[in-house]
Image 1 (cartoon, one colour):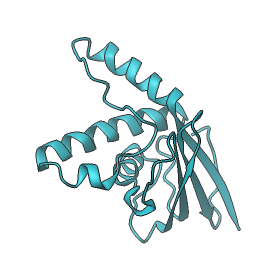
Image 2: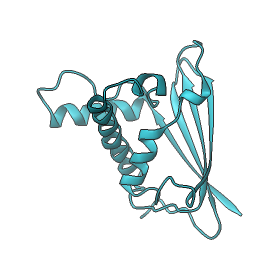
Image 3: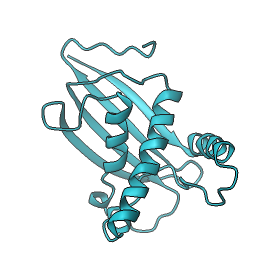
Image 4: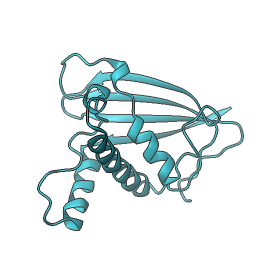
Length: 154
């Protein structure tokens, strides 16, 4: 038997994070996170190592904020499947396999939402894409197996 935990990353979450970021970094000019979906692998794989690590760290910080916002830090999911659906705000062609949420999964691990994204804990990862001009977002559906129970009060 499995239970489902759903998380939605949308523009509201991005705006809340950017507001917090600019409060903490008043001299900053550029928004650290601009879209409610992970950068395409085509974007970050070609970056020099230092820039890639900086981008990864921005996303880890953002995901930590988002997980905390949902009161799911230290949830420690350890036996689950994950379906990730990215809804873009344009009909432009997007390759599903370029939407690997690498930095988000690392953020989930660092925040304690999941134990790890290795094969012992995350058994399958399904990637989907869609279109929603009015509400671009990324939806995460965790299918939690065995006797794990969902508790958003931890």
